[in-house]
Image (tube, rainbow, N blue to C red; front, side, top):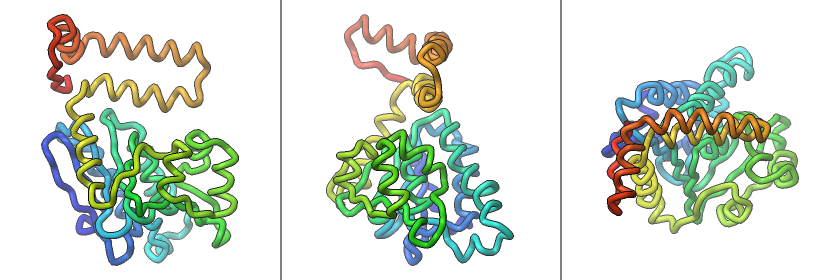
Length: 254
C-alpha cells in the first residue's frame, strides 16, 4: 500500500498524500495502516500535512477492499480507528488540505487534524445513512463537539453534503481558500506550526482533546501539569529571552 501513500519531507513538515486519484482516494484499510506507520516515526518532523491527490481528499473507505475482511468491525477496530487515534495522540500539530470530497472516513480523517483548510470546491459528507449504515471514524464524537448536536444530526441522519463555505460558517473547519491556493496555504500553515514551540504545542493539543470530556477543575489541573513541563523546555527559555529582548523567538522544538 506504500504506492497509495506519497510521503515527502518539506523541511520540518511531513507531508502525507493519499495517492489514489482514480478512486477519488477511497481508502482501503491498508492505506490507513500506512498513514499510521508514518505517524509512528516522524523522524524529527514538527508538523504533519495530510493531502489528497487529484480532485478529492478522500471519498471514504474503499468498500471493495474492506469487504475482504470478515467483518466491518475488524476493519474499523484494527485499521481505521487506530490511525485516527494515532493522530489524536501525536505530539505535533496536524493540518489537512481538502479539495473536493471529504466523505465518510475521509471526513473523519480531515476533521481529525488540528486545522482543516478547504478549497472552495471542497465538501464534507456523512453519507452512511443513505446506504443503511452508521457514521464511524469517531464522527459521532467529533461532529457534535465541532458544530453542535443539531448540525451533526443534519449531517449524520440526513446524509446531506456540506459545502466548504457552510463548514466554515459552522466552525467545522479553519479556512476556505481559492482552489489554486490550497496546497500553498495549507503548507504555509504547517510550516508556521512547525516553527513553533513543539513541546508546548503538543501539550496544548492534548489538553484541548481532554478538555472536551473534563470538568473545569480537571482541565485546570491538567494545564498546571503541562505548564510545569513546558516551562523547562529550551523553547520556553528562548521565548522568555526573546520577549525581554523584544525580538522574535527562534524555537527549535525542544
